[in-house]
Length: 174
Length: 93
Image (cartoon, rainbow over all chains, first blue to last red):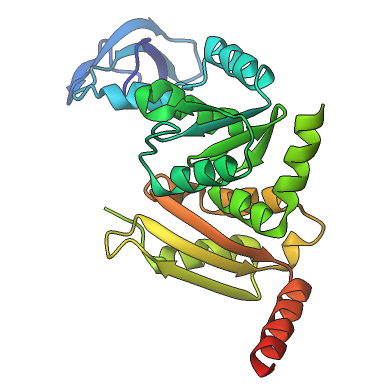
């Protein structure tokens, strides 16, 4: 457990003979700071505990906090709002670095529509933040008209049914 | 460290109560890539995107270790029946 703030812990003891208390358990030091003897209730000790984390892992702090910062969110809002079609993918339009991303690029190219791509491999913060932003665990992620359309499987299925073509025709007319 | 086909199946069964489920490990043994076909009544009235979100949510824990999840089919029992019948008639023709 990693904890920056000291914890206050109260111990209730039945014995009334103890006058001071000091113990070391592993890396945790317990020091009695106050002692009150409210009669006839049990003894109450107040302790301040200082935890010294034995291992400090960078990944622990990253996982605890969200990768989707307010700044990143507003940047994504803008990117998505200012382009009719945006594909967040691994690699670039001309050099996809993942089979699934490549599939969606090829579909969009075959439909002759202009689209923007953003390479998520260039920035890990962006990659993690986007997963939260879209509530979608994988890439590619396709946005059409400001709305999350889907990943690779959904895009392929919509393309095979002709639904993607229909939607994009509508979008391009506006 | 990967995920087993059985883990993926048991999570999907527990959360989506499928009437038909097929999970194929396409990772070649490392457990990081799966193809899923699932038939569930819970997909009724849901769009494709929502159905995929339901599968992703059911596999939230597993997704931390899965690199690629391909959801090939998310259909209702009724759609599944229709698809089976049309496949059969295609095969007969």
